[in-house]
Image 1 (cartoon, one colour):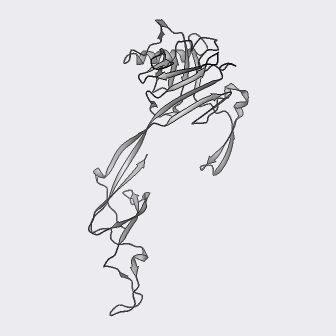
Image 2 (spheres, rainbow, N blue to C red):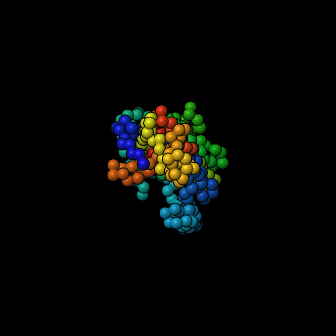
Length: 299
């Protein structure tokens, strides 16, 4: 077996950015979507939902019961109410973001809002935040008509279309969509966005997550004139006895021999095997040619 030490330029640390799409929708009393997680407080029966799936860690198929609440949700944040801490937290976010973007303000049509309607997106859906400009949302008003919200990519949430009314803001890194006006956050109103009432029992949120996957790239070299032998018994043949050779003696085929590389092992400095790259197909190694393999490993 032949070992080669990596040089500094042979190990490259980089990353891959991905933006998976998600759709989360409330139909009746159940939340569905790209990630299926229930919203237990809509219906008491959902508090003991049954989940079935496969777990390699637990050795096969499993069945669990319990609430599954880590899903997109729509909640209130109101000054002086029982959830006043959440309201104060939203104001703190506005104070921070307003320093770099004047579009972030708790005011609506000139007056500071004392109540917010907030779409919350858990971190399970993203790594670094919601992708800017990717979010749209919709629900039904008290008359059964569809209302739509759009993210303008700069932190503004507009009603109807991107040229419609500015009704709130989105905090991409925190996963909050804060609605501060436009009849979407009226206390006790069946017209609150996403309000679970007999006339408004359906909403949908579409967005993309922003994920960054660290990647290591290993450059493995197969130099010319090297790696042209094999420990595989089939690399030799057993000729009939001729001349000074005896029957059964193993002789390397020196003329026209071919070596094929099928696997590449990654080792520590103590020669401990920590990874194996299996090639999609064997690669012929000519004695006169160098070959460079690039192995990409997600971390």
